[in-house]
Image (tube, rainbow, N blue to C red; front, top):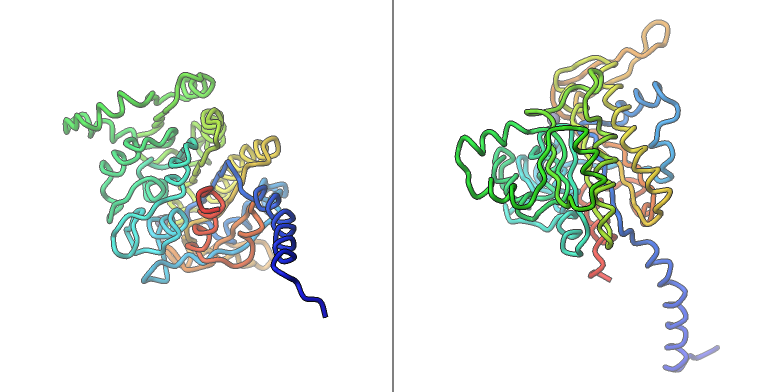
Length: 363
Ligand SMILES: [Zn+2]
């Protein structure tokens, strides 16, 4: 039997360390892009896949399922489940970036900001809606819209693209000087797609606030402009100027809104394909920049969609509810650390894994 003395043990441990550490370092991404299709479960992805056999998510090698529950409820909502992904903490209905105790928890976007990475939030609804808000604000109620915007621009989040231009009029009419001054001092503001495209190529434009509709943007089926893919391309162009890395969250809202209204198969399919086109932009960036981790998931399922067969075995899409359900949602990942996100995970586990992958101070 062999006995190792202290010196031998040291050598063995050093060799193990040398063998393990380079790959572990490689497993940490310096660019992280998280996609959330609000309200989209497995059935919504089934509709998209049946309409297009070459979905971008099909190129993502890691797939799994996510449990979307909150701290004290089974059927969740955007606020608590986006908070769980953003902060690694499950919370209550209405919570934005706070735990069950209503106290702030550091978000993935704030970890990025602390490490001097660029940061961005993109959505097809109001920029202060629950999903983007959970990544950059801390309030006990999602209705605190102006406070949410103030916290976003105070950080500042470098790229804010979506809807919600109505808020600018509210800020003006209520004479909210502090927030007005912050926006004027720190941001280039636009409501125009062509201008956004120019700004995305202008290296002097650091912080961009682009709001392209008064509230939620138009349906994908009715030619939403800018498209989520166009906003994603612009966001990546702006954020890749940050030498240390970047964090970008991209949300498609229509998959939730139109399921609440129990609209037809063509509407939901168009939303999912529109979302997938934005994912395609991120994946082609990831090919050229393999240090990028791309994650695609949902906050919860909406509508309780079933895809039963008619007498010819063609799909009949039916809704069980006009609200959310507790169904597990899909998760796809590609890039450094993606393997850790496969299998069945809780939403707060996904948040904790992403935080440990992104946080270089945790090594
Ligand atoms: Zn909803």
